[in-house]
Length: 215
Length: 215
DNA sequence: CGAATTATTCATCATATGATGAATTAGACG
DNA sequence: CGTCTAATTCATCATATGATGAATAATTCG
Image (tube, rainbow over all chains, first blue to last red; front, side):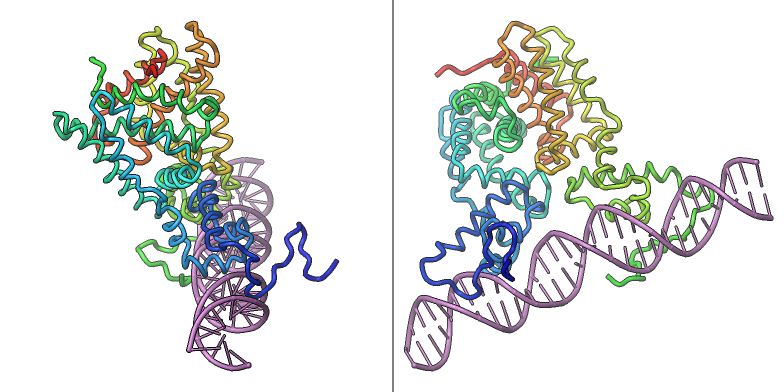
């Protein structure tokens, strides 16, 4: 065995700058590796070294491009989409179809793998309550939830009631996203998305309209 | 950290076995500290030293009582609950009231702080996908979800459809538990539990009965 | 060409962690 | 009393982690 040889396949990479064209956009490769890693293992479970390994790059290079781990995370989570925009569009629907519009919009968006990666990361870190997650939580709740609440309020419900309904809407959608994309529960993962939507819409519309059980 | 200096108040505890009556059941104190810590920070985020600190005890003592971290975790999430029993009882209800029974049972159970601690821990680690969580996930899905599915199937729905409905039931309940107890979203946290139940039941009953939207 | 810049790896640090074994003090039991 | 065992802290290890500062090799630009 030659001196530098390390076990599995990975040739000990050369030391300086590589000749042109050799490596595609490394920075992007790292960011993508990070997204995947964060999505798989959550913020705390992910290590800079793990990201480096996945990107086939030295760990120091990760630090070179993105100063700190938190920085990397921030950049990864800085969505390729503007969730507030998406939701805003979804909210622009007549009241009786609001549920359908929201559910369809959100669930379809999550079918896009890129958005799903980020979404899973966000959900995970919100649930984890990690330092990184606290900011996201604030954003999600302030921006998204109150957007929904305001739309409901706009149809003649008082503010407090509207917030209650909005949180139920979110609870149902979050539950489905969790089971389908994060926990990956059997029936939900393999069902075609249209089926999931069809099953989710009535519940959400019910929440929007404030269906309650009487004691 | 400087070695000997102990900042806030805590006198450097004495070294051998303490005189009688001095310390209540230390083992239990540690287990409770662990439960709280796991519930707050998730499996990975929790450290043996952190638990020790919370229990006001040397870290080695934690290892003395519970060999490994995984062992401690197992013991903590095992303790007070037999979720299968709880669910089984909830499933023993006439079909039109099934939703109410399940929702009421589960949501009320979670109002008990002890169970809540464990529950939050379980949810967190299932979502996190940590090593510890994988076992729990299997258990939850196999035991709980298929219990619900079988009950639904028992009312004359085919097996596949029943599993689909069961997963929707769980998605709704999980969503509410998440928002109320894990993420602690404003409106849901402060609402009286009866209000939350009233808002959740119709959605869940709808899932049980397989309400769909037609295209 | 030569200097500056960029892309990359290497070597290393300080810290936190899970774990282990020894030391110390007290109660239990004969 | 003396011995055994239980409860407790202390000292330490090996490892992983985030981070930093070289060192090295290529590209760019004046």
